[in-house]
Length: 312
Image (cartoon, rainbow, N blue to C red; front, side):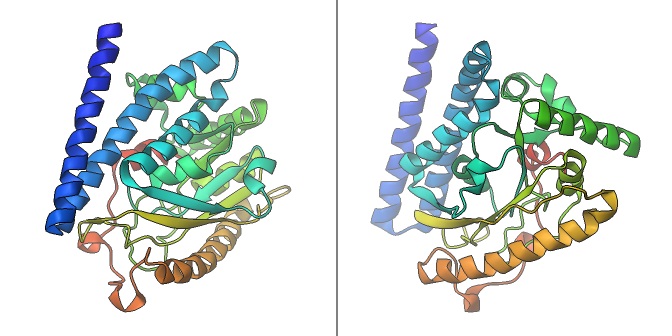
């Protein structure tokens, strides 16, 4: 066991050294491509380290009946690792302390790039988890971590299964007072302007089924910090605004469409305000530089989206 830990730490150290060498070379040569790949490697290193930590931490927390804190503690670890490895930080504005005062709830956030995993690290309250497909429960390491950290599993192979899955998820949310976080766009937009893709209905069906509030989480456009198309990856502080929870008590499935439009409308309006500030601080590209297009003309899905947005 000691030998495994030694080699793991050695590998992490060597990886960190390579990343720093890339970043130093990038600064000396003023090559933003090297900076992009250097910080990308650093991000994946931080993610791998925290995945191992999260599995161990979740197992230990389960022994003491606190498995629901697994994803919270892992997300927090990733937040600080990303600050150390990449210099990225998210400044959360939660004037009503909604994240800590509202539980259980369905948290919904806009989805821009791979960096949104770090958003989770900054906004996850205690006893919150992602949602995932039931089949992921059986994948080694990932499935173990998800099960141990009280992930809300949802399978939707048919309409009947979907209804039953949301009912089970709603029951789980109430029985252990577990909130969930969902990206309702379903995939990353890669936008360099303040807008969002159309929302899927899963998060709203779940909130109505569970009769719990929806907490909108709005992240400013940060296309000057990470821009996959232009191979840009800079340090920066990105603003996040937590909006007042929207209640679902008394609402039914007939109200889902109106609820979706209400939430999305409020989020888009706030996104435009936050992005104006982000542009002043150099976090987002200026309006005249925005392409108003997606990468290669289409939004891109990924395995991460499949894992973390099964309910969308």
